[in-house]
Structures are given as C-alpha cells and as structure tokens.
Amino acid sequence: MQIDEKSKSALEDIINRLDGMKSMQEGINEDIKAVAKYLDVKPGEIKRVITLVNKERKKGDVIEAEQDILDTAVDMVNRTKR
Image 1 (cartoon, rainbow, N blue to C red):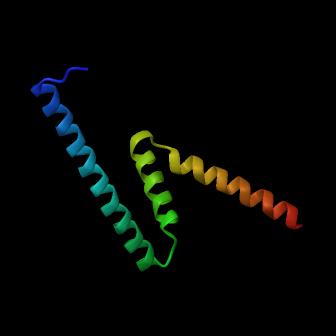
Image 2: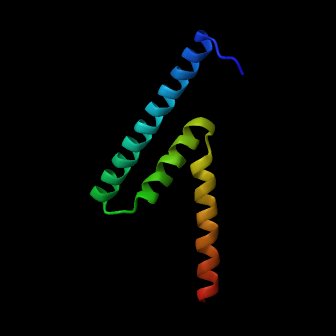
C-alpha cells in the first residue's frame, strides 16, 4: 500500500484522536469512581445509571420499561416467599 502525505496526515490525525479518546475515557472512569466513592456505591452502579439516563434521553420510555421489569421481579420474589 502506498501512502501519500495527505493520507499519512489523515492517519496521524485519526491516531491522535483515538489517543485523545482513550485519555478522555480514562478521565471519565476516574470521575465515575470518585462519584461512586462519594455515594458509597460501586462504580458499576453509577455506570448503570449513566447508561439508563443516556438511553432514556435518546429513545425515551427506557426507565419505565426497566421499572416494569424490576416490579415484575420483585412480585415474583414476593410470591415465592409466601
């Protein structure tokens, strides 16, 4: 494969942006850990909240659907305890 200067420059730009994204993701993960520590919960719980909020913002009705699933699970657990 022959790479001219324009292509090389474009590839370098992509590589630099990928490095920037990696650095940003690391920073976000550190922020999540800090919030989790402050709230005394696991980072995975914070990530789950963030995921649900993002889905809700993009699609709508996601949190309501999740609540329905949780309500059903609680109902099933309560029935087996009786």
